Length: 490
Image (cartoon, rainbow, N blue to C red; front, side, top):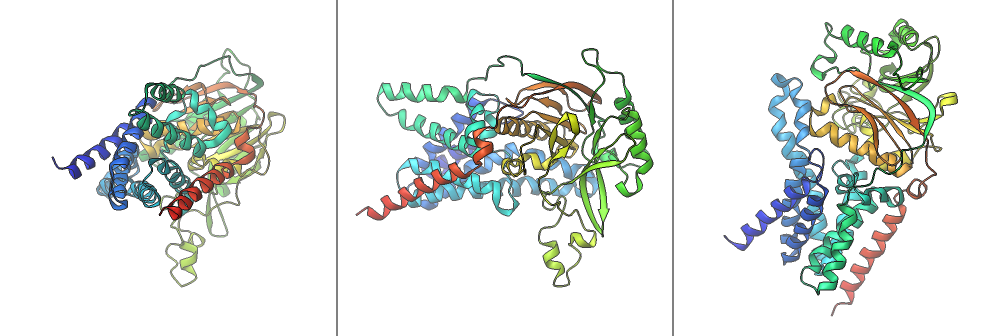
């Protein structure tokens, strides 16, 4: 076996092992081990080009495994779109791998010292969350949500945790050839990243009881004219069901994203029926609406008579899934077939906002994909009392995708110190406390509801106050130092 082939296989192995840290596998020690192998591979790369190839190999294996669920949307109508599924996996894996290749290339270009890969890798993960509208799914930090280190999200956020994770993987590789005391120190530094977080004392609960409804409408049946009435009636029955024995009547009801198949403009009678089923208590539900030729994916709150008292339009849309990028720009030049203003796809809302639910408190609404972005949650105009995450994870299949999406909702809870009330169409519906613990849930592929007391929020976290600026400043300093050292090298 040639050294080049051996290095390529080792890079692929590193990515595959690291992927085992993510849901549904959930073995965080393998994330650290995989990243450590990746640093070992990077150390062996003699040129920037070789380093880029190694980074691409690590990233391709990692993203191919963690994002394999991306085939699911194409299998909803397999006869028409199934042929696209393999290409989707390859392109998504290659796209993520290009970011990691850039990190490995830049690190080797800046310095032969291995430590430079730590800020470079963190920087490209930060970039992956922002550029081209962002796609931070499967961030290495996501695998740490059940570990002691995962609680550091409240202090440093996802990108700060990525930095710590990469730093520990680097130190672990370096220490393997060092003296015994340094090996012991590196092992101790590793423990928080593999040690399960203690459940600790129960989360302090408020007197507010929320009912979270999960209708379990499979995506291929969700809009079937013969089935929509079944799913709608099911949600009405779950909403009107007697309260759980441990609680009194719920103070509010939450339905998932696009919970009803009718446009808001034609749903007045439907909304009145929903409100009546809830006994006049507030109901938050997902619905599509149209205004001036534009379509919106929205959440509304119903008043006692079924009137719309609060309205939120999803503002961070899925590229190519909910809209075509640059569609409105293209319309200026007469290419109108892609433009949301001509009814193609959805238009984005005004941005993050709060829903005032009276005595229950103020909620930050997130619709599906929006829960992936820590900086979107930080963009709320004021601090909420809790987060509502309404989603339709039926698009993501019945295995890895919904579990990874739940992990990200739990990350947002820790980062903000806020509880998350999550209503999902086919699962996983959950009540999440401010430490990211799932207090109650409904599994995938089940219909039902949860009555759960809303946990009290914690004090504002450091990350909720500072966002990504501290880690950005740190990366700037470290990368600047690497550039300065390179220039001073004789």
